[in-house]
Length: 419
Image 1 (cartoon, rainbow, N blue to C red):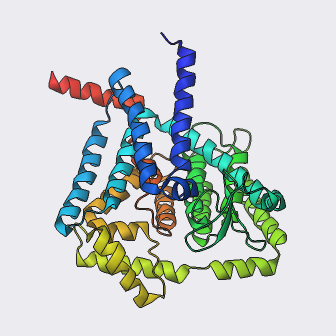
Image 2: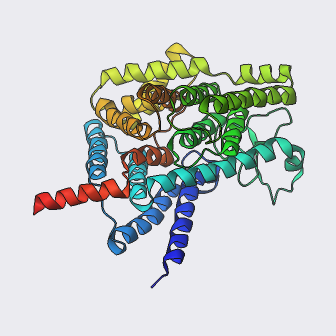
């Protein structure tokens, strides 16, 4: 018999391990892309998580979230319908199905509150480390031996240094912060989720240090979408949040302090980089027109098959890249929501958006604030292609997770009906 304190310790340790692995080895990170391969990684993650899922269900008698069964089965059935209608059987469908199943299993292994807290802790560690190696000890990073910090190139030929918990661009005049992700634009998405969780979903007092580090990391990505999303989340908190920043100061004073810190941090970056370097960096990395072109191309493709989509092969590999070039000279499809519409159609995408809304609806926020946060999330995930990302599926599927109390009420109600 395991003592209660030891059992809780092991449970917390396992929860941290699973969430860290899911973040560190998700489909968009260099540890996954460079060393293991995205498909192999998602299969391995699914196997590991399924072991703990079965343990919870069979040994610990964890109650099944009935609502999640219908939604996950519905989404998988819609994927299979798309595959059959388009006679398309690419391995990418398996990655998406496994991503959905990972999210489904995680909401039964870890409580919603624990997931939020551990996600914040992991992102804080990764964000703080990336800021240190990218800016504070940058020269040391460049001079570390290859055996300790390996060198490699990404898909577009950019030289990178693997600093283990982050990567650093191996160029003296390149200052964007990648974290462990394939692009700074992807990094800002998961940083903004951490910021949203810290400001709106936690039950404890807000940790100012967490907020500052997340702001610094978002600023260091030099992502326009990241800036807009972070600003909307912040303003929603200032105007519509129901909880206080601290018991000893009112919300208005506390949030004015947060705004002051944002401006101060941005000024520090301008001073650090120099105004000319900052402007050059922002202009060179601007991809606004390419992202708008991707959204337009996906919508046009979706209209051609609005209900069940055109499938991965026809939509992502053929139609959308061709249509994008009608608007802008690029082949990059950078819209998650647009890609879901063009690949899977309206029903699948509507359920996906519903799950995002359910997650946001858990926030300590007035309804207008929830609408603004929903728009912010739409902006940030529409800036990158993340339809294969198991971490993003897990985050939004946690919108279905209910507290143990409400889950028990549902189970008891079903039991009474059966009797």
